[in-house]
Length: 320
Image 1 (tube, rainbow, N blue to C red):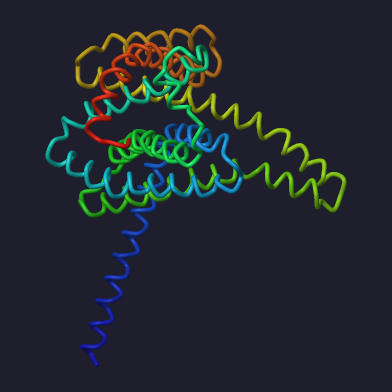
Image 2 (tube, one colour):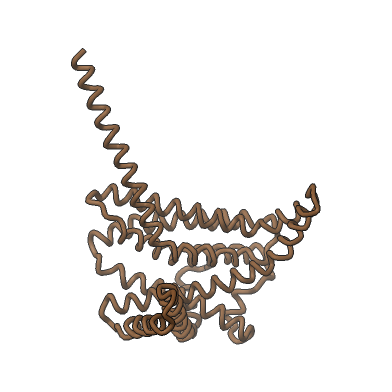
């Protein structure tokens, strides 16, 4: 009997440790997710543009494919990769993030150039070729997953830097929880956004009250404007996040701290000059100047990316 009681005491002690570990993981995941909130918003803003122009029955399948690609990016590639880099070659994380930031700058700048001069570059025009809807869907999904990889890398890196745990496995589990939760939150929100017009049509047709039918019609009329707005926000987010990653990387690696210091000083001066909501003003000025830097860098990268890197990549990976 005493042996059974001792065993029960051991089981209870193990259960308490497990419960404490779950609480620690939840707390760390919440803190890490909050730190990465800015990039999460960017990710949610970027994604809806990838279903723009497709029939309603293809919207959710496309989002589902992108969300699965995002989950694979985070859990299969980035999670073990970042943990290995953090352990064996911590110095390599910043340069890799800078490459990713440069790619975001290029993609955002490419969209701006296309909007301003639709026929300025044949390579850009090819990206928007809609003659084969199935081929276009494949390219859109592949492009969305590539863009998500960069944003996911930033999210996971921010989360990794935030997690404070002496245990490798606790760190790994927390990072996995953050990655999975953010993926579900982002693409769940995106699915709601892109299907809101269908909800509006249903309300407009079957609403039991005049107010309900009016709400439905309002949703239908508002959604094209919202999608256009999100597409614009998504492009701006690419430039802002990409520029911020590159600028911060240049400062951290001590390659060129002038952009970081100049933007930081200018943002502080602007906040002090205005005097109110200084934190918000600092953020707005910093984000705006990061975006300008990202646009300039992206425009500079377009010729090399489309005429050198792109053709080489097409030869190395046929069909992409």
